[in-house]
Image 1: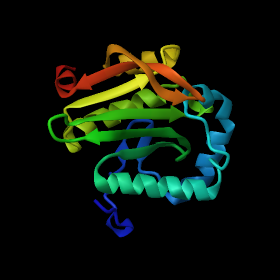
Image 2: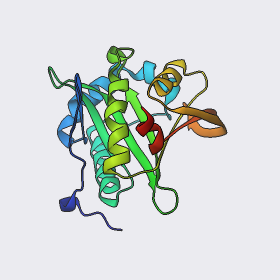
Image 3: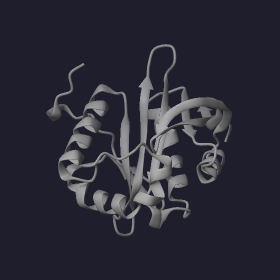
Image 4: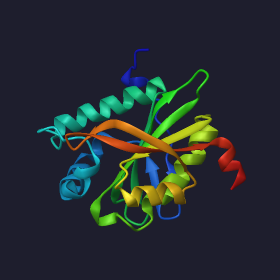
Length: 194
């Protein structure tokens, strides 16, 4: 499928108590690059190596174009998190790797800027994204993976209702090294039981 920029199928904003989620835009560049630069040491242990030009405007423009193409193709729904009281960028969360057919599943990935970590913002973002994934995107299963030493992420996923399924050996190349990950999942029936 060819994604045409004028046929954006971006998701609508999702509104929470303290924050809202909306698709990333080119106008977010300054806030995004500033927060990412400020949080680099905090984020590096949990992310792929950053390209030399990662925080430059051209790389961000390419990132937004990629997000738009994935959204138009229906394979991802990327969002940035913004605080309600001042529209400050807090981080990002993506429902990606969406697979249709017999699977109807997707993978959640997220990051939070260091100044906002440990304040419950990502938990609120997950509480907004999970129902959206099951009702609007009509998925059956959500997955999330994290490095076994990432205790904050493990607690976050368990608090959000994800169940640990097992170990994915040498799953993703994080910070320059192939890393094992713990796989967590949630199915739509889990949400109904809450």
